[in-house]
Image (cartoon, rainbow, N blue to C red; front, side):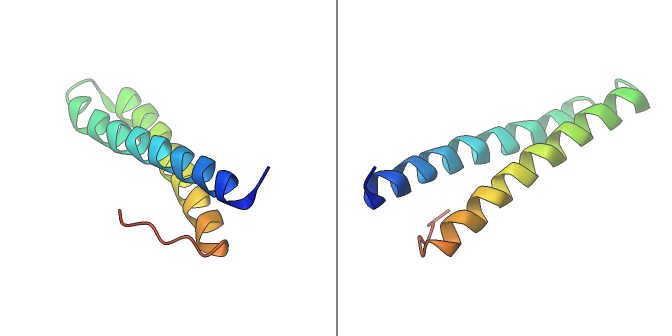
Length: 69
């Protein structure tokens, strides 16, 4: 696998994970009236998605890829 292809795949993965993290953050707002247990679960899921996004962003930064997002 060549470097540009690997970078493109990482960028695509990053964009997918970033969109997922944004969606999960919105679910926190939507679950506000559902109860504390639901809010805690949704918050934990959103935090995991954000962590995945940050890991991919760090990998891209180490490769020297600058994201416009």
